[in-house]
Image (cartoon, rainbow, N blue to C red; front, top):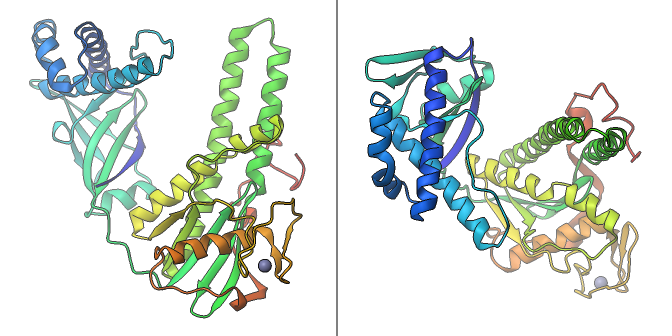
Length: 404
Ligand SMILES: [Zn+2]
C-alpha cells in the first residue's frame, strides 16, 4: 500500500470547537506518554487499557475514535523514545508541543467534490472545514482509485493521506542508468543496440546550500550576544533552504521519471547504503549536505507510485573499473576515464556504464543487453536543466552557475 500525504490549507480560521479538540488531543497524547513511560508500555492497546478510563472521566464527551488515535500517536512517540534510550542518547522525557491531532479514516468525512470536510468533535457536535482546493489537489481528489487514509489536523492546515495499491511494475524495454554527482545526474540510456549519454544538471542546489551556509555563519557571528534571536534566524534560514532544495529535487526527479515512463525504462541507481568517504572535512560537509539520498528516495517513491522499475546496485569500484576490460584503476582521474586498453570516456558516464553492467549481470534489468561499443559519443540527451525550473530566487541564493 502506497501513501501520499497531501497538504490542504483552510479557507478560514479553525473553528473554536476544533481548537479545543486539538488541545484536548494533545493533552490526551501527553497523558498517555507519561503513563506509558511509568508502566513501560508502548503499544496502543496497552495504553488504551491504562489511561482510557481516566481520560474518559475527565473528558466525557470527546469522540472515542479520536481518543484511540491519541494513544496511537503516543505509542509512536514512546517507541521513538525507547529507540533513543537504547542507543544511549541522553534525552528529555518526550512530550508533544505542537497543537495537532490525528484521525483515522472512519473518524472524518471528506466530500471530494466540494472539498468540505466534516470533523466530529464529540457526540452531537461536528465542525465543517472548508479546504482550499487547487489544481494540484484536484488531481488527488478526482482520482477515485485513491482511497482516503488518516487525517492530520494542524492549526492552519490539514494533511490528508491518499492511499493506493502499488501498481504493477512494467517490463522494461530500455534502461536508464544514473550516476549521482554533486551537481548532476549523469548516465546512460540504452535502448536496443544504441546507448546514449544522458544528463540532468542541477548546479543550483549546491549554490543554494553554500549561500545559506554562509548566511547562517554570518548570522551566528552577528548575534553572538543573543542566542535566542540567532537560533530563530538560523532556523528560518534552514527552512527556506530546505524548501528551495526540496523543490528542485522534485523537479529533477519528475523529469527523470517522465523520461523513463515514456520510454518504458528501468532506472538503475547506485545503492548509497553505507556510503562513506575519507576526504577533507570541508568536502565531507559539502557531500553530506548534498542530499543525494533524498533525491534517490524521491525518485524511488515516485517510481513506485507510477510502476516504474528501479534497480539499485552496489556502487563499489563503479567509478574505477574499465567497462571494456574490467581493469580497476586506483590512481586519481580527471574528468576523463582513461584505460590502458584504449577506452576513454567521461568518468561519470563510465561509472553509469558499470552500474548498468552490474545490474544486467545480476539479471536485475529484465532481458536487456549492453555493449560499451554501442555507445554513441556525439549524442547527449538532456533530462533536466536549471532553466526548466523557471524560478530563480530574488535574494541571491541562486544565481551565477559555477560560483560557490
Ligand atoms: Zn580497459
